[in-house]
Image 1: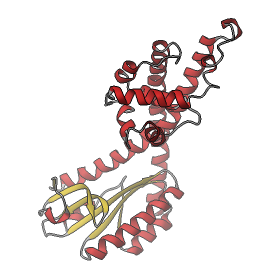
Image 2 (image 1 turned 120 degrees about the horizontal axis):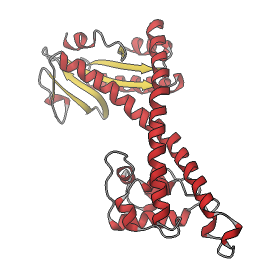
Image 3 (image 1 turned 180 degrees about the vertical axis):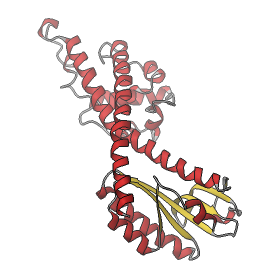
Image 4 (image 1 turned 90 degrees about the vertical axis):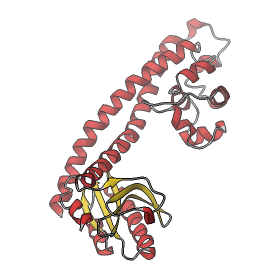
Length: 293
């Protein structure tokens, strides 16, 4: 097991450095361009236009980073009174959603109420002549700083999402290769032999994969990845709790953990001692055979 853990650790370190750096560069470039367009369209944030926000929803993230304190997505959404998760639809790099006019107005109002005057001094220094400070130079520096802050923060989120998708795709690939069919059902009772569903609620806890093999045996899979040992310790506790909940209601269900990243083998042994079958996501040999048996 120590060898598997070391392989997983080294692969994760290399993958994180390479992929997260790529995400950071991409987000930085995208944000710089959007910041410049937003500044130009709003006379350096003096008058942010509703239609510009609607046509360029990614600017919501820039406005958040210009508040004092910097408001998280959830906080900004709450202060805008636009509902949970709404802002996420506007901050998606690849598939953003256009906010309604009323929502865009609330976003701008919230920015103006909490904007950081130390970052935007020209909005308050009405009495100073232009020669006393170089507004364009400040804007250019601010553009770089905000783009960097957003890139360093959001790149980690992008990486976690990408890493989780990669892990889930690997598991799904094993199941499909073994002959299982992906279906959409409301509960595990609806799964027929040879079928599987993802993100299925089981005993009030979500299973990443629920599989019914051709013998009728139910297998529930939790997929967990971690960048640090401390983080995985939290994931381990979650998996043990889910195991207890699932087996209390379904004593014949088999519980599997597919894990990857930086992991202490002591935590893996705890999972195994609990009764959870463990597979490493960089070496899934045996998973399809186990689920099928």
